Image: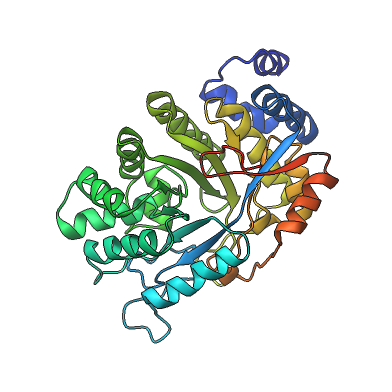
Length: 350
């Protein structure tokens, strides 16, 4: 372990077995290593955040993921598709609260053509040109392509022409197909997820990356996930940030004990150390609550995420933490850092 610690402190890249061995370290020793990496990458005492809103344009989905409590099957009376008027009201409210970005995601709806999404983007850009549209995770892009019989590049080019600004990293779960077959068998494969991101980066779109852990995967699977992201980042440089969070079991069909704050912090710290070429690491106050998120700033995180003016998917599991922008700024200051607004690409706004 002493050689492993020395290697991390020297800024050397870890291999698979070395990365896996990090989980054996004491919690605070691991946190200290991640903190050193964080300060090496971000020497200023700044913690960033973004003011935005998650808008789920539909909850109708044919994927049937076992970890999701939000989706409804086609024909379900609780299913919905937002009208452009409803979407407009949500964006107007976001702007009134100081927001400047929307995260737009939905279920895999079998009856919506690609033209529906193009119309939605064009409408948003025409009515709200100042708003950054961060939309459509890789499983959605793959689903659009399959439905239309188009390539990933053709779909992305059409969405970009309509107003797509960047892509969120949702739907990654664990990038190991053995795991994906168990928890989301009708969703895109690990390689398809990565190929969407590879294509997006080649076309000039910036994206984020995520990991949902703490269900059926092993620690080896978590490391495999991180290494696949690191490899793609080495190739394209298109990921701006990584956001890991634990599976929330409430109201889902996937049986797993809820991950502890210790497990979350260890996985966060390992992520910061292994992903040496993804610059930013986001704390998940939405799943962990504000106090653990503050602690996460000493375990490698340099970003407090979003104000989440609206959030539905995690809330559907029974976990609902709400924070205003003022509260986020106070929490960052109380942890000893300077809060700064940012854009999706992490350029500062103040």
